[in-house]
Length: 396
Ligand code: RM4
Ligand code: MN
Ligand code: MN
Image 1 (tube, rainbow, N blue to C red):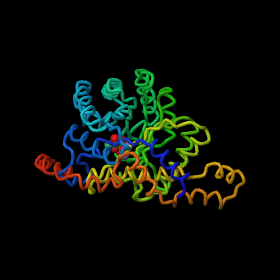
Image 2: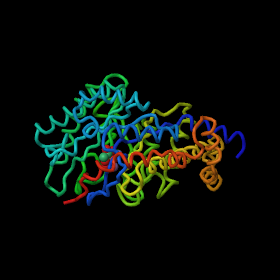
Image 3: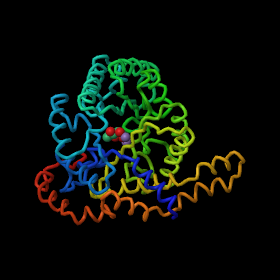
Image 4: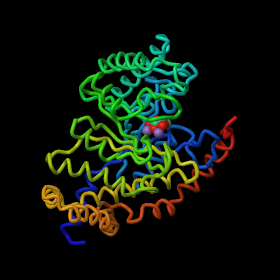
């Protein structure tokens, strides 16, 4: 790789910040049960501590996404404690994730529930999240709605669209300047017949109905098989509606596997669409890059480090695309040469350049090895083993 290419890689890496999900450090599982890990985080303090380890070895993860019900069970009252932890671990609070799917009252939905009293509970919770986001200076609120129905004819789909529009408008009205409401979509699960926000079109229309500070969030695992995700990204960029990502990989559905483990070329293509947009418009897209994974079998922190390194590698490769010549080749419909320009960047081995970047930023050249030799995992395994032994793993 020549000096010019190395410079491009370094510049790209300086720009890429990746947010970690607090829940990715806790014991999570599948609907059939959990395999408990003795080192998994059991408290918000431990989640901050683990995130700080990932940031220490990668230098790329300054923020931690919080799930309000799991991390701030007392809502606004927990803000001072979160601020204290943020200071202690030098990790800023990231996106604020409402939980409108877990409580018993949400059996038939939250914002889409036919019962106005339940819709009110959900709106109130998200309004609390808006207040928490403001208090923490963490401007993104990212609700994911599990709303939907399981059997044809059991719910009025159009009425529920109206409930969503109404609720989201009210929430949007509470946003302060600079705050953003990022709407995530998902085709199915837990609802298996219809999901109220099933795809990017529905999310986009609802965001538009809510107001100008509402944007769309793309979770890579929330698509049907074979869907062209980078095309969705291109559309959202074109519409100025691309707010954020939840990165993970999938083979079948919302598998929440580590990034790039199944299809690294797809993540590269997504990054490419963003870099191409930024080159053409000479702007930086205001996109929150977040990880949303739930590693059931891999070690929590190792899986996170693996994902962050993969994101850096694929982002750096996308930065190496020669945009000027690609634009010309596209214009001339030089299909093979255009495709090879893209593929050529994908096949570059950026790892030596990334290692050099790490060294120049006083980071370990090999983050995984640095974590493994740090003794942190052995320490938390000892400290948390007892607490995790009591965790519930059972499905029924
Ligand atoms: C959902 C969705 C949300 C995440 C929850 C835990 O499938 O991806 O973003 O908060 O899982
Ligand atoms: Mn998600
Ligand atoms: Mn998901």
